[in-house]
Image 1 (spheres, rainbow, N blue to C red):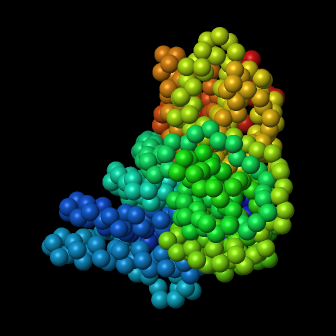
Image 2: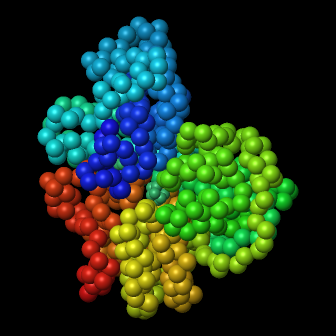
Image 3: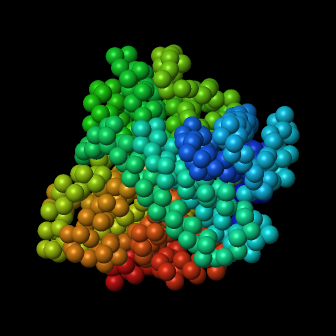
Length: 541
Ligand code: SF4
Ligand code: SF3
């Protein structure tokens, strides 16, 4: 196996087993799935040219790609199912085209790939194929192909979320499929790949906008909301991951049943949405930073629903109380369709629940674009009067590396006349710090999930507009933590928008070669994080 797609990769790439726990068989199946999806992409694009709308295949591709993101799916049977379905979709489109006398002929062997019979056959084929990128190309071309592939994975994840909320755009699907047909090709022009990478950022911006529309039209615009971090006596269900719709289904399925619903990880911002916070049994948030997940899950006295997540594979010791949805799957865990949550509810009723109440403080959420722009006048006046000197966007992912303490330290050390916008799960390093307020505006503003990056971009754009300058001219510094491929897509969006001076950590991606990094530094002045003190000094002078 070879996998280098996430921040925690062992030096240069995981080869014997993933740091995430992915084993070589799972890695081979994921590689083969991407190869098969490349084949399907040729057909889906051809179908479009022939006037067929390959809607089912479009959505399927995003879901299947999502299953190859870090930590999402380690289940060989489920991956086999995705591979077989990929070939099925391809054959269906092929028949449709033949029926129109448009017999497709593709030179690329991926388009003609036939799925082996057994799981073992598939694993062997996956090992033969390896990762989709062209391993004979110069290192910098390989690097750009990897950036594109991982960015597209992020786009697929966000497009999957958006589609569930009824928001789709053919431009997204077409780009994803074009990218798939290109990755691994012997195109050796650096500029071609650089353009594809920036185009991926552009398409991701559209995807995030659709996701924002999907979330706000289904659940309303988030409003500032206090969320309790403790628990109360009674039966309980924990919902983790990013899928607000799954959470809504859980809230509906448990209404009037005396079960309290708790969020975990990226689900925290759900408390700010009017259409979710209206449920009286939507109680609070459980759990802190990412590295505590195993312990937190183990100790939770009720079942856990893992919706599309970036979390670690659950341990055997508590597997029997964990359920998954969508592309999330691990061997031995029960997978649910969220229109039928009887098993989850029964499990909650059968488990002990919390025996007593416990206060653990609270945090504020709900500072997405609508809330922040609602107080824009005050913010702008604050900047003009000199009481707000600087904004920091400290956003992105959490992870296990010790270097991630940088983000906690940086936030703690920011001066009292600065405001911190945050989003993503990286905030669990500092989300409960008491940072005070400036003229009634909290210094720490939680914009939401990584899925809400569009909101942060809109806030930055509105500030630039108010000050009649570009985003790069604002007293705003972006300090981003990354972990997996959705973060790659968001980073590409920021580059596409021309945002400069982003500080990225805790380490730079292993898939960026020195020459590609030089290009990024030259055009975007991107830099690795150093120490909190040094960076603050460099930013604030
Ligand atoms: Fe390694 Fe990350 Fe790939 Fe897992 S997802 S195998 S940790 S690079
Ligand atoms: Fe990053 Fe997954 Fe959490 Fe969702 S992209 S912030 S890790």
